[in-house]
Every structure is written in C-alpha cells, then in structure tokens.
Amino acid sequence: MEVWQCNQCAKCSGSCPVSFAMDYLPHQIVRLLQLDLKDTVLQSRSLWLCTGCKICVSRCPHKVDLLNIIMELRREARALSTGKVQAYHEAFLDSVERYGRTSSALALGISNGSRKEIRWPMLKRGKIKVFRGRVHDKVSIKRLFARAKRGDMGD
Image 1: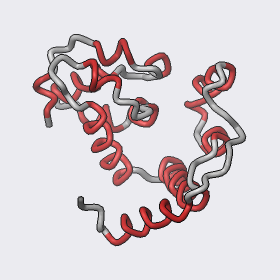
Image 2: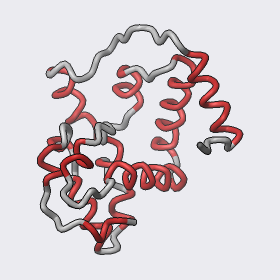
Image 3: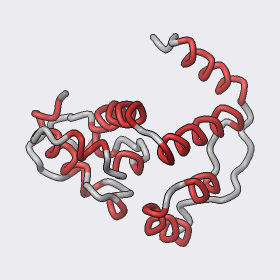
Image 4: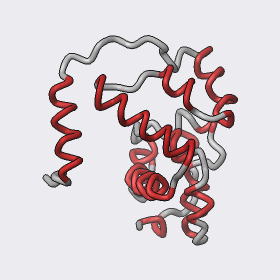
C-alpha cells in the first residue's frame, strides 16, 4: 500500500465533504494503517461514508490514492462482516443490481442505529434524496453485475 508516502498534511481530511460525520478522518485512517492498526480501520464507519469523489486524491501533494485504499479496505471489511453489516451490504448491492441505484430510503431503513447521527443532518441539508428518478440504462448495470459474478472485471 502507498500509505507510507503520506506525511499527514491532512489536506485530504480538510477537503472531504463528509468528514463531519466520520469517526476517523481520511488522514487518520492512513495513520492507523501506518501504525498497523488495520482492524480498527476495518471496524470504522468512515470507510462506508466515503463518497468516492476523489477530492482527497486530487489534493494530496504525494498523490496517495486514498480512494483506492478505502475501496480495498471495504472489500476486506465486507469479507469479514456478518449479521446486520452483511445484510446491509447485500441489500445495497441487490438494490443497485435491480434498480440501477440504491435508494436513500434503503440507507435510512436498514442501517443500524449508529448512523442515526449522520442521517438526519444529511436529510436536513438535502444531501439525501428519498425519492430518486429512474435509471434509464439498467441493462448496462445488469451486464456489469453479471461480469462481476463471473469474475470478468479485467480491462
């Protein structure tokens, strides 16, 4: 991992649009990894709050690809998860596969109580839309899921 390139300038954290709701800020996640505390990171909710906007990557003076690191950590956390966490991930992926996107109602309804403190501020700010428009190209999404199930995700 490229975590050793990070000098903890915290530009990633300062520019993250959801840092207000994170238990560990982006630069703290990297520091935990540097300190070999991956288990702590895998249990944090910050991994799941990342929007994938890549602002952290564009602001990093050392070009640490934090989004890629977080995506790898998410995969690892999903593999280790059980119970409610696993149910949430399965419901999320099922929703995307069926409808082309997930509904915020799914996130509000299935997520556990620890997300309560971020749900309502996000609703008030208009960051979460309960009703979304239709996805017009569901066929491409179904093809993508079929390729993923076959393990055919190479370039």
